[in-house]
Image (cartoon, rainbow, N blue to C red; front, side, top):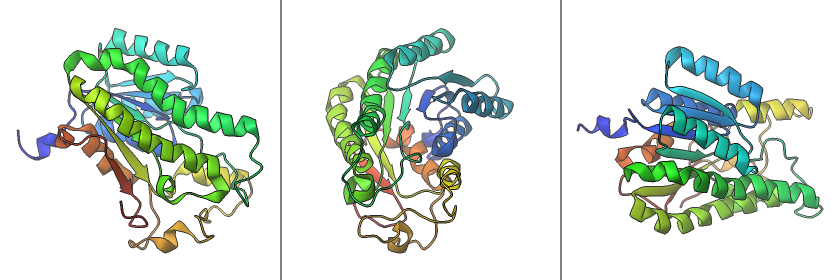
Length: 270
């Protein structure tokens, strides 16, 4: 096998939650371009239909769209049944679904309604746990697998304006460290990809919906902008994350597990 072949995913089956729009859409497309069969799993049924139709044009026979809610195990179980019937296995799980763009930053960490706090925890943490657990029976079949949990640079910086969101991303890092020892004997690695503030279509759309300036970046702790802290002096885009995702999903990372890779242009040194 040549060095570049280490990054190929031919014959692998990948599930991407939140995979129909925003950054997740780029994850789905990137995995398909690397040769994987991709399950585009998302809460937004319309986005699933649109994304899968587009991907099927360039990757016929290798795309499955499924509507899920990561907080509802019955929808996850239905997804696994569909994948089992079609491809009989799951090799890669990208736990990308999360609540972020729709959350309105606050002036302090206080005053978050219980319902909102619980929903963020349920989606961003319990959803990762549940999706991984439900997929495991199909992952165990080949003694090779990848779980990639999506966190955020805020896991390490914190952010008073989105305290509940930042807390969940810190928990994602720890959940990865807790899963890795349990899944290692099964040949399954577990790692975290932690993006910085990314200019995705979903984030820009939410800014417009709220009447914000679509070019405005959200502040990080201390009131500054994340972009002002970057060593690489430009905005971050979804395309900046795909290479690291493919690395973590591929045989190139066979001996890497329990780790977190921060992709943020150099605002945080891990």
